[in-house]
Image (cartoon, rainbow, N blue to C red):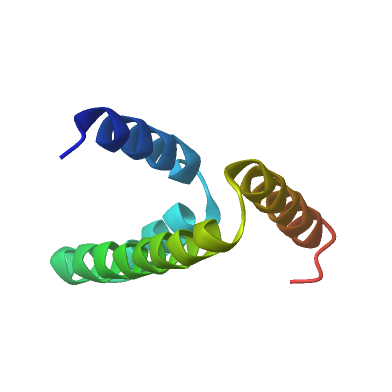
Length: 90
């Protein structure tokens, strides 16, 4: 295992997820039940599946595009999703 890649990926994802709507959805779900373990398991599995799909999709997309183009595509998609969320069209 490449621990440098692991650490940088972990830190990046952890910081990106802090305070986003997924965390607030988990907070809301856990506030409505006493089954904390069930909510934790559901959150971990959902985020794990979403992350795994991103990694798999990224691997195949990375084979089609060079790394520089991949940065532009992902940055553009990030900005577009941000605009979509801010305009309330989602």
